[in-house]
Amino acid sequence: MIKENYFYEHLPFDELNPSYILHRQCTIDSAHSFAAHWHESIELLYLFEGECDVMIDTERFHMSRRDVVCVNSGRIHSISSAGFTQYSALIVSPEFLRECGFPAETMLKPFISYADDQTVADGIRLANREGKYCRPYWQSVQKAAVVSLLCHLYRSYAVGGSGKKPISAAGSNVVKESLTYIRAHYHEDVSTQELADRVGVTVNHLCACFKKVTGMSVKKYVNSMRCRDAEAMLFSGEYTVAEAGARCGFNNMPYFAKVYRSVVGMLPSDTLSEGKHAAG
Image 1 (cartoon, rainbow, N blue to C red):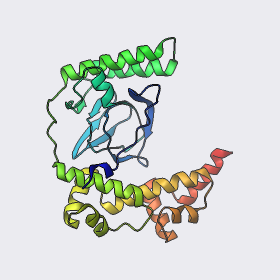
Image 2: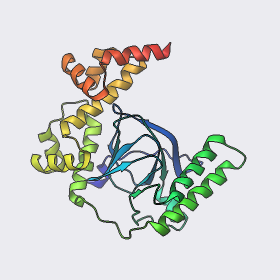
Image 3: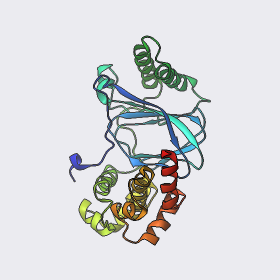
Image 4: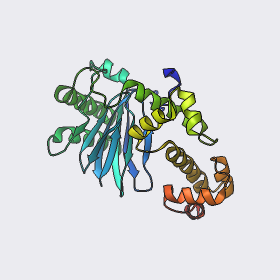
């Protein structure tokens, strides 16, 4: 297996600010989850409305309002919720960590509840406020808030070394390489056998690792990715239901409608109508 071929989320760091990315308001609900992915940066998730579950490798963390989850570098993670949930995501590059003198290879404790420590949540809220109101020198204040937050995290929650991984490195690599291949070929006929051959393991081993990390079967994950892509196409109003389904790998329209409804929570035609209504 070649690491350079693994799929990971491409993070669009701004050339003017290659240090971190702050998404102040992200939204998920029962019909829209954030699929399993990974990247080399650390990511801090702060929940400010609702509840959600965050999977990191094979560990599940339940977040309530004001809780924080730390996703360490290289960890496969996903976010799901049974209801409407809003959170912010602070993503810090390894280069910025090293520039500030932090041990980028050191793992942080993954879950920090607001009841146990308010400092972490307060630091993220301060960074959010500065980005929202953009008062004079807000970028400097925001950067200082991020550095202060990182100081507190590495002083209080560093667990040392590379941390204990609940899934073997080999198993994690199998899933990462599978995600890479699925991302590039989900609109084609992707069989579990073909995927297992591609990553060099047996079908049983692939299915066990994939289910353990993503919480889904390979088929369900592929269909979920297809439907999310189709949802964006339909909402844009530029494609018919048949065109969107075919472009995303569905050749049978009744089956497309059935799978789409199970993933998105409505029929493809409903999404098409919503898109047209939103466009006016």
